[in-house]
Amino acid sequence: METADVAECCIVDYGCNIKRTKLVIPKPVEFNQFDGITRIGSIDKTAKPFTFVPYEQFIYSGNGRYNIKNIFATYKSNRVYLRTKENNLTLSTMKWINIRGVFEDPRSVSAFTRCNGTSCYTSEDEYPISGWMVEVMKKMILDIDIKSMLTIPADNVNNATGTNSQQPQQ
Image (tube, rainbow, N blue to C red; front, side, top):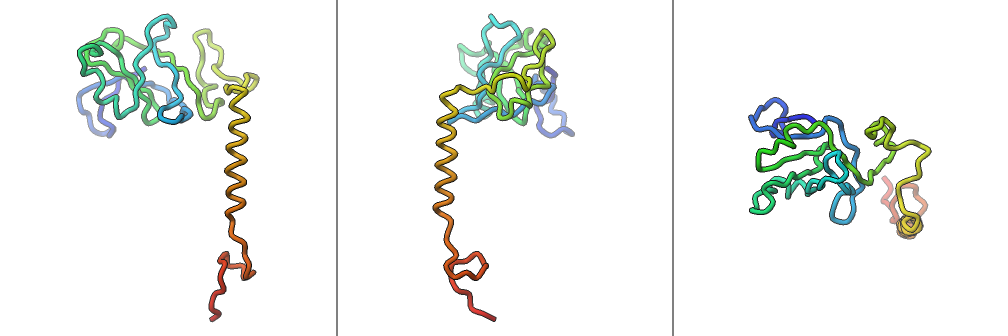
């Protein structure tokens, strides 16, 4: 984790800091309404995880009476950002976080390591997808491919122009 200025423009120093990951985080799978990040929290597995919210909600998070002490996390521009409204000693001294999720390319997380130094993903690991999802995904792909093949217009004129009507000759 590193401290960064809240300004997105790197030549402007807004003077207000936020915590973010030093390393670029691979793109998570996009589910229906949310990213495929399943947990962001401290490296203590027994500790309460941070509240993961979409960026649009992140900018307003922590304004309530009951969530002012919560640490909020979001994924934006290939980084995870953390913030809290209250001065939180835990957040200011945090050096590492634990991120779990389903990523578009599992090989992209091979650069990350567990606490014992082993890689988070190797080519010998099973692909992180449930068996029942394989058949559903095959069906989705076949449906899309078959529909696109059925909607290709035939070239009845055979004029090699890609149109289906006769062009006036010049």
